[in-house]
Image (cartoon, rainbow, N blue to C red; front, side, top):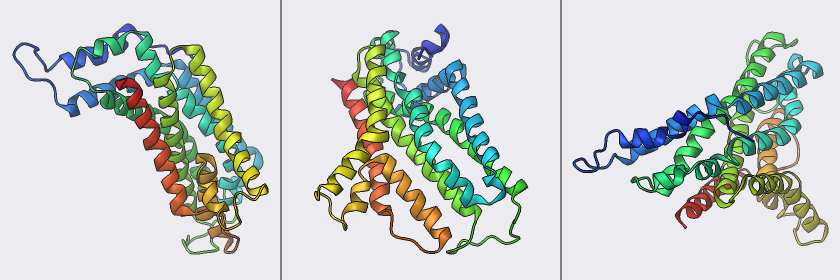
Length: 298
């Protein structure tokens, strides 16, 4: 993926970092200033990259098309999120990888990392700044269509309730809100994986190849490994729901079912270990950012 960024945007971090610091007479800018500079640069990159804009439009069209054709918006919040869950399990990782797999590699190819080494910008500041900036663009891409879906449910729901309950057995916008929050956490976790990929590769082709491998592992490989372990007896019945938390995709799916679907149904088997699943998403996020920081500091 080629990022359509102008030369002025490419050098924005250097220019803004130099602003506020006279290397001969003034102290270096504060870490907050450096981090904010990197975040602003990434936001400009996202806004000016046509590929991200096309991805956002395509994602919105698919999400709105699914709920419109399936007419789930007329049935309520829970039927709508159930219809969206499986497509989002595929689309969210693809979009998150697209937002991040060249983020740091692009800086290296343009020579910006070499320039930044002459300024007091630490590796973790660059990683966090890039991550936050890309995360803002990613979340806007994902959450705006889901917000439109929620509005569509309000407008078109055929059996709308005058009072929404949050207790077991009732359809509720609270349940859809949980689904949206969990989707955002899942997207942020995969974005961190993409940044780790971007920091350890040395070329666009290797970045693309590793991104495809990561998608296959996240979308298929880890679930297949868990299924094989269960069928082979390595994973017991009591440990299955905790094993599912090891995969970010399975953790996301289990959290959605446990906190939004089973709750609305009123009954059902335990499908996830909520705490373990949340910890898994956090570990994938923090661990991937740590890998990215380590790779930059080598």
